[in-house]
Figure (cartoon, helix red, strand yellow):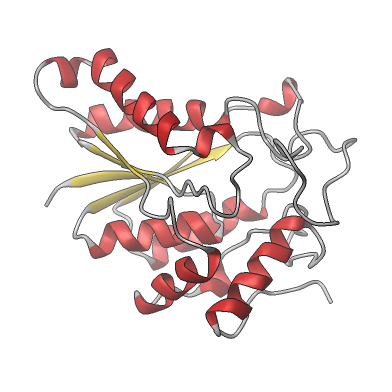
Length: 224
């Protein structure tokens, strides 16, 4: 069975990505990054999801990007968007986050002798993030195959983004078809310590709309 490293934030998209990788009969190794995000409940969710979805191993790596700031997700003095998605690059963009995460996933994949890395990047709902674009992921894959001993010796790595062109509703429908329990996921930008969602941030709005469009009951646990 081939091994795959799957980036797992604890949110809806990354959980679906792990479920997809598992359905493709990969031996999945889940990797979560504690990057100084506003709350830790999504990391607790990632742990539950890794266990629920049968990951062979789950590692959490701390890389504190809040030291730099530059994002509403790492700087608590910055207001989170609650009035709908904004034009251009959102304030929730975290500088270089996917590059850092993919680099760590690449390092673990090389040690595991894995040729496959999965990421829940999506351009439909979050088209403002420059590091979620197909062009970016293709460039990272090219770089990865120039930068590692494994690739130079013939074990080329592939970056998989199975959700790239799916709507939120399509993502949810696929996850449901794979038996994913979305009540375990945390997508909210400002979830409380128990993982209860605020219901008003843009991430909550997109998630709720996705369930409605998919005609699937919203199992999100809200604060009120």
